[in-house]
Image (tube, rainbow over all chains, first blue to last red):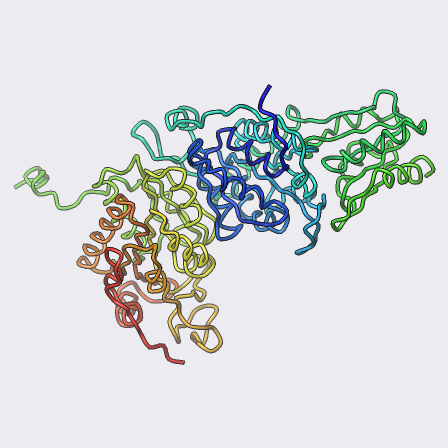
Length: 361
Length: 266
């Protein structure tokens, strides 16, 4: 068993990054995730593992520092919150186009605009449908606990390198700020330059040896036919992720007449709603997508013919619900419930919505 | 005497730059980019740094620099090359990292990245090609466009009241403690090319010593954007660009050697 600690979500993800052998973190402070860079600066990982931590002059610079270090085949992590992630989008599009691995955490706050510093899940569309310009996808993991904030660092890097694709850990101000017991993984060594050369010599830019052609990291191809071919390649990668990398959790779903579909903080709250409903004799289960892209379409579609209705719960005006509806192809009635703009729904509010919109609806 | 008497090692006066690829340059005939590429690649070759060097290409005419430079390269978003180079250098502190940027990239959209990379004193080299115009997008006004200069977005000439002053970013970054060697060169004559190449050498030497930023501006022409024949463009550059952007070292060994105060009419 690994080391047990009581930590904030933001601290846990930072500590997990050091332990995962991450080479570099670049970021810019923004509430409610500043503890990530504060923790890293205080820990001095340069002395623990040689990991580099740098506070950039802006989010624009931070994501492009990520682009540079990831281009060298190094493991790079960054984090921000909604308005900062909007500024990241240009860089993320380039990273996706140039097929660079990296892990980006978004500790979401309410919007639009400067919005609020309270938790929100209103960045679902931005995270799962691309976000920046062009046809691309991020692999999006949604932690529902401090433990998962820590665990998804390793999961994220595994996927990032398997597919050479940026990975997003989509949490929110609640998961980032709350403290829970977390079991930390043991320290992994950082890759040596020799290991990076062995693994990534075919694409990474760390200096051209005599034995190979130069490596070029670019998202540019002025030849439209080749650019289309590159896009086909990206799409094949995403189809493979959809086939092989879907994650989800089902709680009390075996005998369910109704489902609540929720991720992250909303799933955590809805677990209590399910408990309250069961006490009242309502047979409801919780379906929790863990990967928001690729969304567990097939797993959710399997409930067609088995349940009477779905309540899609999220701290937004209704974004997740679009994927839920796509998954069940109009064969199950689906309704949305959620507080937003920084407000958090209570388990009782979710239960009331279930009773009124789904059972009584 | 037949040809074999002439083709001999001792008669060799020029060979193709080893670290330039065989791809046909995408630059207009008469443009300074090709020469700037060549001297940088010559110096990297002469210093034996090919396997140790990663370059960062900008957005602008030199967006395809990686097609011509036979080293590992990264193409950066518009203006972000200094941030990309920072990521590279922090991740690989012993590698030689340079950016190659135009005036729009470095002195307009990337001004924040330029100033902060210089202020942090990253151990990288910046090559700044200043031709006072946006070449690739078709000759629009640049941050370095001179007063009165006609471009596609200043068709009646740059009006300082409306459009602001041309930005002397090189003098500006020379004031920052993170810069160690700052110079302004040109590549329009053989003598200028030799001087510029010496500056490129010095820039990479400074990087090897990890003294901070080495910054080489090359004032260049844009005959297409300026709508002049190559020779005329070079003349115009000498007569108009050089008085405002005077050639020579600005900061050497961390010390300012020239203040370059030029009066700007208002």
